[in-house]
Length: 225
Image (cartoon, rainbow, N blue to C red):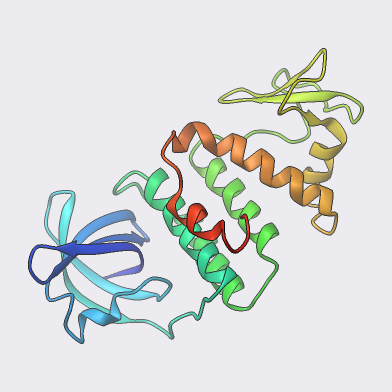
Protein backbone atom coordinates (compact mmCIF):
# COMPACT_ATOMS: atom_id res chain seq x y z
CA UNK A 1 0.00 0.00 0.00
CA UNK A 2 1.18 3.49 -0.85
CA UNK A 3 0.37 6.97 0.42
CA UNK A 4 -0.85 9.02 -2.53
CA UNK A 5 -2.50 12.21 -3.71
CA UNK A 6 -4.57 12.61 -6.86
CA UNK A 7 -3.01 15.17 -9.19
CA UNK A 8 -5.44 14.86 -12.09
CA UNK A 9 -8.13 12.54 -13.38
CA UNK A 10 -10.21 12.27 -16.53
CA UNK A 11 -12.88 9.88 -17.85
CA UNK A 12 -11.57 6.67 -19.35
CA UNK A 13 -13.71 4.25 -21.34
CA UNK A 14 -17.28 3.71 -20.12
CA UNK A 15 -17.16 4.13 -16.34
CA UNK A 16 -13.48 4.33 -15.45
CA UNK A 17 -11.05 7.19 -14.87
CA UNK A 18 -7.43 7.68 -15.82
CA UNK A 19 -5.73 9.07 -12.73
CA UNK A 20 -2.36 10.74 -12.23
CA UNK A 21 -1.17 10.02 -8.69
CA UNK A 22 1.70 11.43 -6.67
CA UNK A 23 2.92 8.69 -4.35
CA UNK A 24 5.88 8.01 -2.11
CA UNK A 25 7.34 6.10 -5.09
CA UNK A 26 6.89 9.00 -7.51
CA UNK A 27 4.23 9.95 -10.03
CA UNK A 28 2.07 7.04 -11.15
CA UNK A 29 -0.64 6.70 -13.78
CA UNK A 30 -3.46 4.28 -13.07
CA UNK A 31 -6.97 3.27 -14.08
CA UNK A 32 -9.74 3.47 -11.50
CA UNK A 33 -12.61 1.20 -12.50
CA UNK A 34 -16.09 2.22 -11.44
CA UNK A 35 -14.90 5.77 -10.92
CA UNK A 36 -18.41 7.16 -11.09
CA UNK A 37 -19.65 5.02 -8.20
CA UNK A 38 -19.88 6.18 -4.59
CA UNK A 39 -16.56 4.51 -3.81
CA UNK A 40 -14.93 6.20 -6.77
CA UNK A 41 -15.97 9.60 -5.45
CA UNK A 42 -13.33 9.24 -2.71
CA UNK A 43 -10.64 9.72 -5.36
CA UNK A 44 -10.27 13.47 -5.42
CA UNK A 45 -7.42 15.99 -5.28
CA UNK A 46 -5.93 17.23 -1.99
CA UNK A 47 -6.99 14.16 0.00
CA UNK A 48 -4.31 11.79 1.30
CA UNK A 49 -5.13 8.25 0.21
CA UNK A 50 -3.82 4.79 0.87
CA UNK A 51 -3.82 2.84 -2.37
CA UNK A 52 -2.79 -0.51 -3.79
CA UNK A 53 -1.63 -0.54 -7.40
CA UNK A 54 -1.42 -3.62 -9.60
CA UNK A 55 0.25 -4.06 -12.96
CA UNK A 56 3.79 -4.13 -14.31
CA UNK A 57 3.57 -1.50 -17.03
CA UNK A 58 3.44 2.27 -16.69
CA UNK A 59 -0.37 2.18 -16.70
CA UNK A 60 -1.48 0.38 -13.55
CA UNK A 61 -4.82 -0.44 -11.93
CA UNK A 62 -6.03 0.87 -8.60
CA UNK A 63 -6.92 -2.33 -6.76
CA UNK A 64 -7.77 -0.75 -3.40
CA UNK A 65 -8.00 2.75 -2.01
CA UNK A 66 -9.05 4.38 1.23
CA UNK A 67 -8.93 7.87 2.67
CA UNK A 68 -6.19 8.46 5.26
CA UNK A 69 -7.61 11.69 6.62
CA UNK A 70 -10.04 14.55 6.04
CA UNK A 71 -10.24 16.29 2.68
CA UNK A 72 -8.26 19.53 2.80
CA UNK A 73 -10.64 22.37 2.04
CA UNK A 74 -9.15 24.60 -0.64
CA UNK A 75 -11.30 27.26 -2.20
CA UNK A 76 -10.89 30.49 -4.13
CA UNK A 77 -7.23 31.47 -4.30
CA UNK A 78 -5.98 28.43 -2.38
CA UNK A 79 -7.84 26.08 -4.73
CA UNK A 80 -6.18 27.58 -7.80
CA UNK A 81 -2.82 27.42 -6.05
CA UNK A 82 -3.36 23.74 -5.30
CA UNK A 83 -4.28 23.09 -8.93
CA UNK A 84 -1.12 24.94 -9.98
CA UNK A 85 1.06 22.70 -7.80
CA UNK A 86 -0.67 19.63 -9.22
CA UNK A 87 -0.13 20.75 -12.80
CA UNK A 88 3.56 21.44 -12.19
CA UNK A 89 4.00 17.89 -10.88
CA UNK A 90 2.11 16.31 -13.78
CA UNK A 91 4.12 18.30 -16.31
CA UNK A 92 7.58 17.97 -14.74
CA UNK A 93 7.80 14.65 -12.89
CA UNK A 94 8.76 11.52 -14.78
CA UNK A 95 6.67 8.42 -14.14
CA UNK A 96 7.86 6.11 -11.37
CA UNK A 97 10.77 8.33 -10.34
CA UNK A 98 10.72 8.50 -6.51
CA UNK A 99 10.86 12.06 -5.18
CA UNK A 100 10.47 11.82 -1.39
CA UNK A 101 11.55 15.41 -0.69
CA UNK A 102 9.12 16.82 -3.25
CA UNK A 103 6.38 14.57 -1.81
CA UNK A 104 7.00 15.98 1.67
CA UNK A 105 7.13 19.55 0.35
CA UNK A 106 3.87 19.02 -1.56
CA UNK A 107 2.14 17.60 1.50
CA UNK A 108 3.25 20.46 3.76
CA UNK A 109 2.29 23.00 1.06
CA UNK A 110 -1.26 21.65 0.86
CA UNK A 111 -1.63 21.81 4.63
CA UNK A 112 -0.31 25.38 4.63
CA UNK A 113 -2.77 26.36 1.88
CA UNK A 114 -5.66 24.83 3.83
CA UNK A 115 -4.59 26.90 6.84
CA UNK A 116 -4.48 30.10 4.78
CA UNK A 117 -0.75 30.75 4.94
CA UNK A 118 0.45 33.56 2.60
CA UNK A 119 0.37 31.94 -0.82
CA UNK A 120 3.20 33.66 -2.68
CA UNK A 121 6.07 32.64 -0.36
CA UNK A 122 4.55 29.15 -0.27
CA UNK A 123 4.41 28.83 -4.06
CA UNK A 124 7.88 30.26 -4.61
CA UNK A 125 9.35 27.91 -1.99
CA UNK A 126 7.68 24.92 -3.64
CA UNK A 127 8.94 25.94 -7.10
CA UNK A 128 12.46 26.40 -5.75
CA UNK A 129 12.49 23.01 -4.03
CA UNK A 130 11.06 21.36 -7.16
CA UNK A 131 13.83 22.84 -9.33
CA UNK A 132 16.49 21.73 -6.84
CA UNK A 133 15.28 18.15 -6.67
CA UNK A 134 14.97 17.86 -10.46
CA UNK A 135 18.58 18.96 -10.85
CA UNK A 136 17.92 22.52 -12.06
CA UNK A 137 18.72 24.43 -8.90
CA UNK A 138 21.12 27.41 -8.87
CA UNK A 139 22.82 29.66 -6.34
CA UNK A 140 21.37 33.00 -5.30
CA UNK A 141 24.61 34.12 -3.65
CA UNK A 142 27.19 33.15 -6.31
CA UNK A 143 27.25 33.49 -10.07
CA UNK A 144 27.97 30.73 -12.60
CA UNK A 145 31.73 31.28 -12.22
CA UNK A 146 31.58 30.99 -8.43
CA UNK A 147 32.03 34.70 -7.73
CA UNK A 148 29.93 36.25 -4.98
CA UNK A 149 26.87 38.08 -6.28
CA UNK A 150 27.53 41.83 -6.16
CA UNK A 151 24.54 43.83 -4.90
CA UNK A 152 25.32 46.68 -7.31
CA UNK A 153 25.55 44.59 -10.51
CA UNK A 154 22.99 43.04 -12.85
CA UNK A 155 22.75 39.34 -13.71
CA UNK A 156 20.94 37.18 -16.25
CA UNK A 157 19.72 33.66 -15.45
CA UNK A 158 21.06 31.13 -17.95
CA UNK A 159 19.32 27.76 -17.99
CA UNK A 160 21.53 24.90 -16.73
CA UNK A 161 24.28 27.41 -15.89
CA UNK A 162 23.19 29.94 -13.27
CA UNK A 163 23.58 33.69 -13.08
CA UNK A 164 25.88 35.48 -15.49
CA UNK A 165 26.95 39.06 -14.82
CA UNK A 166 25.78 41.57 -17.43
CA UNK A 167 28.09 44.30 -18.74
CA UNK A 168 24.99 46.36 -19.52
CA UNK A 169 21.38 46.17 -18.41
CA UNK A 170 19.26 43.87 -20.59
CA UNK A 171 15.56 42.89 -20.44
CA UNK A 172 14.88 40.17 -17.89
CA UNK A 173 18.03 40.81 -15.84
CA UNK A 174 18.09 40.80 -12.03
CA UNK A 175 19.75 43.26 -9.66
CA UNK A 176 22.28 41.63 -7.38
CA UNK A 177 20.71 43.13 -4.25
CA UNK A 178 17.37 41.49 -5.15
CA UNK A 179 18.99 38.07 -5.54
CA UNK A 180 20.68 38.44 -2.16
CA UNK A 181 17.34 39.41 -0.59
CA UNK A 182 15.83 36.28 -2.11
CA UNK A 183 18.65 34.16 -0.70
CA UNK A 184 17.64 35.43 2.75
CA UNK A 185 13.91 34.76 2.04
CA UNK A 186 12.91 38.33 2.81
CA UNK A 187 9.24 37.60 2.08
CA UNK A 188 8.01 40.61 4.03
CA UNK A 189 9.43 42.79 1.25
CA UNK A 190 6.93 43.20 -1.59
CA UNK A 191 9.74 43.80 -4.09
CA UNK A 192 11.30 40.45 -3.14
CA UNK A 193 8.00 38.69 -3.85
CA UNK A 194 7.76 40.31 -7.27
CA UNK A 195 11.35 39.38 -8.15
CA UNK A 196 10.83 35.82 -6.89
CA UNK A 197 7.81 35.33 -9.15
CA UNK A 198 9.68 36.63 -12.19
CA UNK A 199 12.71 34.50 -11.40
CA UNK A 200 10.73 31.28 -10.96
CA UNK A 201 8.86 31.85 -14.20
CA UNK A 202 12.17 32.26 -16.04
CA UNK A 203 13.62 29.16 -14.38
CA UNK A 204 10.59 26.98 -15.08
CA UNK A 205 9.93 28.17 -18.64
CA UNK A 206 12.51 25.90 -20.39
CA UNK A 207 11.13 22.88 -18.53
CA UNK A 208 7.46 23.61 -19.18
CA UNK A 209 7.86 24.42 -22.87
CA UNK A 210 5.45 26.54 -24.86
CA UNK A 211 2.21 24.93 -23.72
CA UNK A 212 0.49 27.32 -21.26
CA UNK A 213 -0.36 26.14 -17.75
CA UNK A 214 -4.11 25.59 -17.62
CA UNK A 215 -4.24 26.40 -13.90
CA UNK A 216 -2.55 29.77 -14.48
CA UNK A 217 -4.96 30.65 -17.27
CA UNK A 218 -7.93 29.75 -15.06
CA UNK A 219 -6.52 31.88 -12.28
CA UNK A 220 -5.92 34.94 -14.47
CA UNK A 221 -9.41 36.28 -13.81
CA UNK A 222 -8.91 36.09 -10.05
CA UNK A 223 -5.25 36.85 -9.43
CA UNK A 224 -1.99 36.23 -11.22
CA UNK A 225 0.02 33.54 -9.40
